[in-house]
Image (cartoon, rainbow, N blue to C red; front, side, top):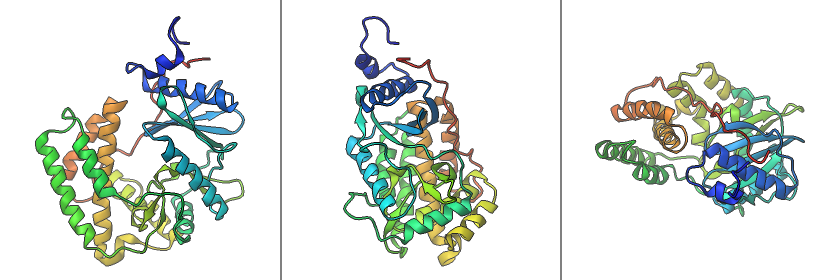
Length: 325
């Protein structure tokens, strides 16, 4: 509980508050408004967002630094996918996210379980998504990996990247962008942009539901198609995962056009992976900053695969004691 004389709202706004505690404070506020029970809420994931399992078959997501409209768009996307026959986690109740104390936004979906798909099953689910006509009328953003990366590089703290390395990374991004614009890409589709087995679940009926729709966008499917191969080449995952993916999806981007589309996308994914670790390390997990530095060194040296990066590890951070019960 907050100390005597300290309001919950003031605690949530305190810049000294531990991020997990802030997320739990927001969770308790939002569940009270939604009529849900936060007792014993289990933190499942800490990354861009904080994901909790609640009693009664509900998953709560506390969105870190996301605007209400962005979260509401993901709710509309889930409803549109369900209407189109693409499994995903249905929003709970009317689906409207809640802005909690401290400005954090909380959304609730049904808990579909914990059985992760194979890469082949994930490939089948992605192929179904990509066969849909692009979802219009939802306000889904266009893919902007290049502009987004440039903006994020410029926002990195000087404690994380030197000005010399910042300039070198921007130059690498410019060269990669030049190659990217010379490639003829497939027609735009609705794409997920964060495909991996932890962002999906096998349903009791046997189908695979796609989760975590905040990154859903409109663009060519190459970034989704490259996910398994990038896991193999950057993180040293078993090579069979890409073979499994190709079997399920029905197309191998690594062999298309002499491999140039894949190599270009892989460099953009690599820059994004470095940025995620650098940002995550400065925000809540300083222990990942050495890995961020290693990733930066790899990129600036333009090393050939395999890169030998540590796989992304979203193990729960040690959380302070629950607030408000």
